[in-house]
Every structure is written in C-alpha cells, then in structure tokens.
Image 1 (spheres, rainbow, N blue to C red):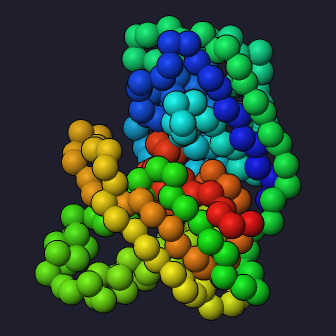
Image 2: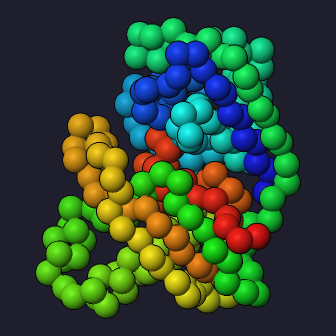
Length: 220
C-alpha cells in the first residue's frame, strides 16, 4: 500500500479541528472528490477515504492512501500558509514521508494505540452498550473493531482470507469532547491488539476523513 504522510507545524498553533483542515484543502481543488469525499453538489461518496485529515500533537496532518498520494503531493507542494476558520496560519516546518506499507493479515497479534477518538458507537449500538455488562460491552466493541477492519479492507480492495482476531482491547471514553456535524458523540481512546497489519496514521471507524480513529503501532 502506498501511503504519504504530510505533517505541518503552524504559527499560530492550530486550535481548529481536522474538519477545518479538510475544508482548506478541499477549496484548493474543489473538483477533486478525493479531497472532500463528495461528488456533485452534496452527494457523499461511500468508500474508504483515500485522503484523511488529522490534528496530532498540535500539527496539521494529511494522509494520502494509494491514489490519494499524488493528490496530497499536489496540494501540499510549496505550501506556505493555511487559512483555517478565518485564521491565517504560517507553515513554519513541514515533514513529508512517502513510503510503501504492508496492509493485511499478520501471523501474530500487533498492538496499536488510538491517537484520536475512535467513533465506535452510533446512537443505536450506544443505547445497547449502556444496558449490558462489561464483558458484553467489550464483545460489542471487539466485533465493531473487526467490522471496521473488514470494511476498510473491502474499500481498499483487499480480500481478507484469514479470521481477524482482536486479542486485546483496552479502551475508555476520550477526555476531549467529540462532535460530528454538531452532534455530540462518544469517542474512545486506548489500545488494541489484532492479527492484522495496519499503516500508522490511518483511521478506523466513523468519519476517518475528519481525523477520527487514527491509529499508530506500539511496541514495534
């Protein structure tokens, strides 16, 4: 899998969320649906986002996957300034990392950490989550995580032939408030281990293009 990670240190330090970064880059090439995940006036594209926007450690981060790599290269080339929610931010340092990453089933469990809140629970399964005990809650989240990986794999054209097993899941409600399109959501942070290799800084779960569910390998 081809992956490009572009990280930008801004001045003043970024205080906006990833949606503001997404909006900025979408305005650079409004006719390219990979940047904003819409086609036409307001038709949402239902495939795993090839371009994802994050705020990590106060830096603006843009991740390009497969065909999204060349698009990210184009819109970040010679970038000197970002206008986020009406505030101009000067790019004082940037780091671009383009590489080939393995994606797929692994022979052993690999450990990951959520760098940004994982949106695992929608309104329906959150109501169920609240009514069951800790073991059932953990089982629900494990099944959701496996479903997220299967959905991502399908969206990226990877056929999963081995059973996905989550051998560890240790998550808790994120301290930071989570809102998606103005609606309060439950976000989870923590760690998990699964027999599947995932590139750093890609997202799992809902709204990954806006930076949610960003993961990073730990203990490698």
